[in-house]
Length: 220
Length: 269
Image (cartoon, rainbow over all chains, first blue to last red; front, side, top):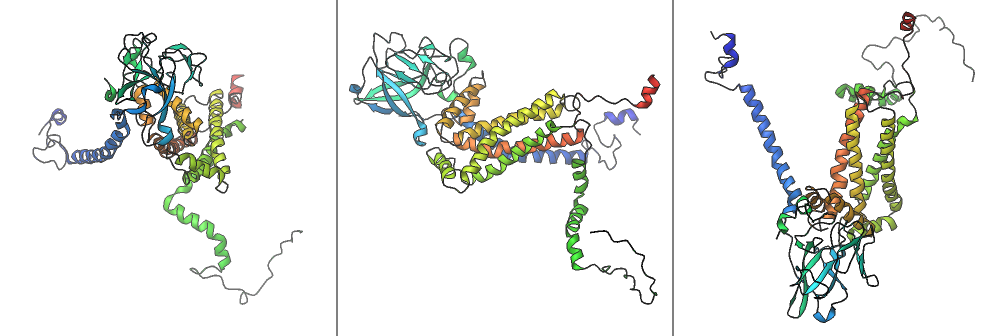
């Protein structure tokens, strides 16, 4: 007869004096049944919860479509003032998917930063770098001005006043077969250095570029 | 009409008296009597099978402390504001189309201008949302200033804070649905405010938009959150909130002092 001390130590149910225990059995049938029921429930729950979760967070990792959009011929643009062009940011939702960019020719006298030497046209996004309202170019003041919270930017899109945390975003441009084309968005820091696109309100100077990581699908 | 004096029954010989009802018979009940009892019969039938009357009595016949006043109705007022939002919202959903390429705005315009009482029901939902937010804060203020969040009611305070956050989520997601200029730009700004949180912000705003830009699914996403996800959570948590109120009881206002037992007062003297 096993003593009381052994009853709690042995891995065999027979030794633990459990009624109806089988020889060599280590897990009670009641415990096995409970575990099986819980496992089956967990599998059933996971089989709808995991796809739903993936469905919900999937867009974060989705590769956004890259396309070039014709915006005119080189004669449409000057090198000392901006022309607004309407471009499609999101396809298939009509007016809600459109945005405005301000475009001018590259001007060696103004665009003296070392990062924009190769861009034939400067295309500035109207999406305010504060919280995303649409800025407009005020010719008389030579400033981009945001109607929502008073963000002000200079000719190059650099912040000169108000709450924005970085300069206005820009778009890639190119000339193909005599047509000016506008491409995908990129963000710039206060030195006009290029970065993968960030949302408004996210500074990318200094530590900001690490606190506000770019999308894995858009990183370049 | 003056009440008639009750006269004793006249002495009638037993042979002439009506025989007493036999057991198992209907005791002389007329169909009218049965009709009068119908309500009780139905309630009894249900109660015999569910024992719900005990729960109903537990919930509704509670002792309330001395000094209970009109400020204690703010929670119920909030709940009725929510019920109003739920009912008007269900009927608005019968007309609304979450279509970003013009259909959403058009369906709202249709409800407002053409549907019978549509402007009224939409107005109830629109202004009722502000009423609900105001009532939530007044209810929260009452709970705070009366000290009703203290032991053992801390968990109910926590549930209340979650209900507040869910109410704000309803306001935020509902604001986009008319899909006019104000709705669109307010949502752009609101989502970007979410994005300013370090590290998680960019992912949170992408989750809300359903992508890197305001896209085809953003509106339907907000609509689903607004009318399916958050209302379900709200109803469940309101149930938990009410259960704890019934279980723990309400507090007396802070200016009501406990009466000392006269026996004890005598002993003290």
